[in-house]
Image (cartoon, rainbow, N blue to C red):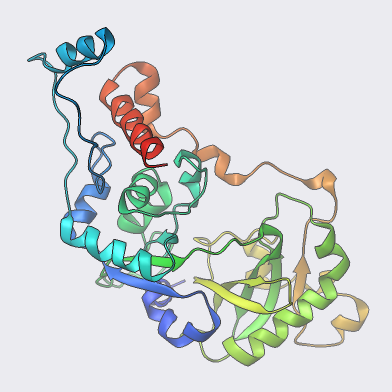
Length: 336
């Protein structure tokens, strides 16, 4: 895997070519000060939201005590940085896309941080929703700091213009998502995307699903992407229509799901997955899915549920992070 292969999988590199077969999206250049804020290891102060006005006269003894506490000279006031122009651009894009979006950077979405959102989802309606997910995500940090970590060439890193990608929010059923592996412009493997769960309809319809994806690949993807080796994700809706979701590099930086990268690169163990009829067809890909509930596994994103901010909270190292988090929750509850 070379650096140019990774660059070709940036959202803005492929979206113009495949706009008609994927989800409507808006791409916004990411200002440098926003990038700096997202990479800041300081307190989890979420920008993009104004605090509700407070009454000058306390209504109860509890509020009076709170006022006295907050006026203590030793108490530091934490202020979120503001990005008014960028916030306006983001909100206009969100409104254009129907009011709710799925956010990502050039390559990755903050899938490892869904648990921190109040709705336990990546569905965002404001810039503050996006910031909360991005600042809590190792995937987003990797996009910023190590986008070419698994590349084998020694060429200089390409110049990256970072972008905020906003995709129209769609309720996608995990059991209808599949990852497809392409080598030398040939579809060699298809894997169930949510491999931790068993879906009865996939086992029963795998031949039909496989043929449907093959037809989609030949008509819309094959020989049209910028590289010969790549990975693409698709969604097959209830009508059987296939939608392109994303492209990824063909290499270890991409999760191989129910395959191993050794299998995919050598193709030695792929033919054994095929039926006798499919084995006779040279262009039939191997298809893998979770075949029984016995093989169900916990979500791979569970390991990301304890970020450094909460480790700091548990050890008492930074109480301000708890204050910021509770403050955000209060604001969202008042909005609802």
